[in-house]
Length: 206
Image 1 (cartoon, rainbow, N blue to C red):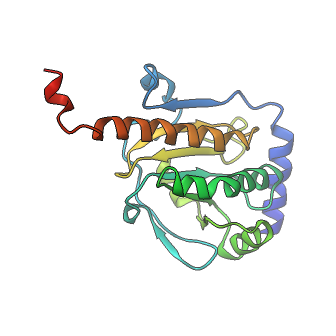
Image 2: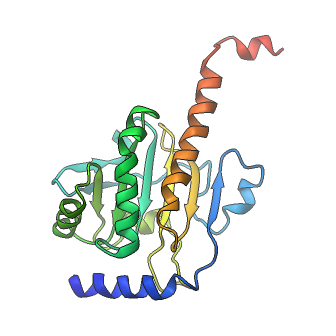
Image 3: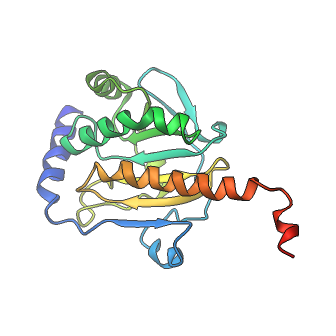
């Protein structure tokens, strides 16, 4: 497992200079239908359910989370880019929970022991889930990176019903996933608050 992780780290580092620019799609983009063609879980689709164990031995089931959820897939534990990404998400996790009423999970193909070591190293306060065999990654049809050689780094933002509202795909700039996710949560909160602020709004427009 450690050899595999080291190999992925080396490949990620060497491929970063050659990967294409980021792809982002969200429910507020007029071109979302076309911009998500390369990302198999498209905006407006319900995310696949999953049940995975995190670094604390807790089983996390997507359909049991009745709040907006950031689901980010990353290549491997303890690699440079994934360390940056997890650290940045960890800095924002309290705001994600308090400001947006949302939660966050990270997913990669390493086992629980690897997750425990990675979480302990960084002091993570959110769940990172062990997707051994990449079954959940496959169910989401996460696009691969670096011309198909590497597991993709893709962040999905789901609403409280599990419907995808944003997709962000960028292998090289791991830190940028945090801003992309919180921007999507801002938009989701804004659209939700505006639609719920006046229950008679639809009638008043008639």
